[in-house]
Length: 122
Image (cartoon, rainbow, N blue to C red):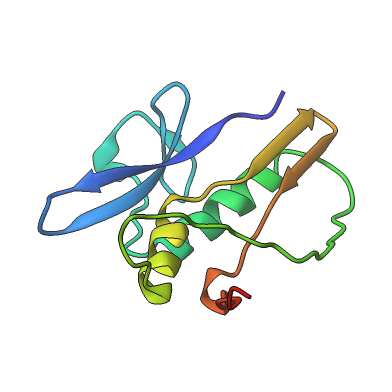
């Protein structure tokens, strides 16, 4: 069964960084897994960390990679006005879609939040 990994946070409030961790609190160091958070590979940008996480996750499953595309529609309801740029930033940091069927099939959804556009209500 593939290892479950997440993007974690390290650093200080003044210099926050992202890292990749597994369920046993091991950290990815770019050379392998380590228990020492000081040796963790650090990322300043969510996109960078997410891409590395995707690469590591997909490398666990053998086989040919196939890619598919579809339209995605988000409905956002809020008491406050929603700014498209703020929504893109929030989604890039917080939205995670990952489906694991078994050790032979893994689906990771990549969403290009920067291409998000507003659909006017009728």
